[in-house]
Image (cartoon, rainbow, N blue to C red; front, side, top):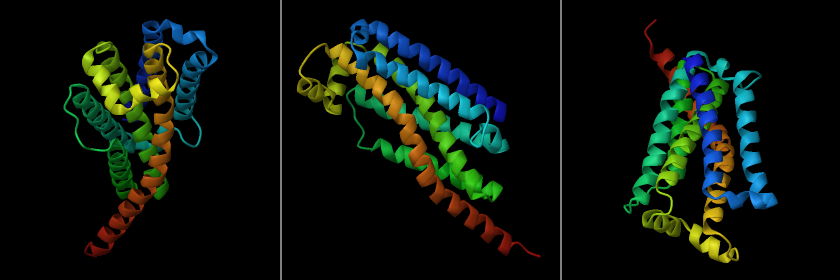
Length: 224
């Protein structure tokens, strides 16, 4: 399962990088400003850092062992749930659920299960962080595909208006709306993995503590 999780992460990063380039093709004037160039470069840089961290070092996915399978399963569920939440909003049927709860639930569930299995808080926290980072990579691929295939539609405009992006665009002083939206998407691709790491560490610690306590209680209740 470790090799499968690493393969999914590597493939997801490659597809995300390709889709970032596709987004620039939708609004080529994005590259006419220093900020417009800097945002995709920052996205590519972060993807490379994530890929390097997954391969070796103290945070390598290999350190999770069989628990990498748990991370992968919950990461896929996270990506599907998050994109489903956004897709229903795009179709004009928003669900009153904060996306943060999906992050928190995935982190606590992953760390709780892994810590229960391994009886190690640190492994549970690491698993939570990787589950969210991997889930975010998969979410990014799905989200960009949703945005690109609905590009220029009335439904997408209504989505961005509910999201607040249209108001932000008007406050920004004008320019191309397409460029503004592509930059908004690129910004989310950069900050979501960072958010995933932060929530994974914080909520993962809580879930891992519960998991290790539950494992200890099970051992004490086991007949001699």
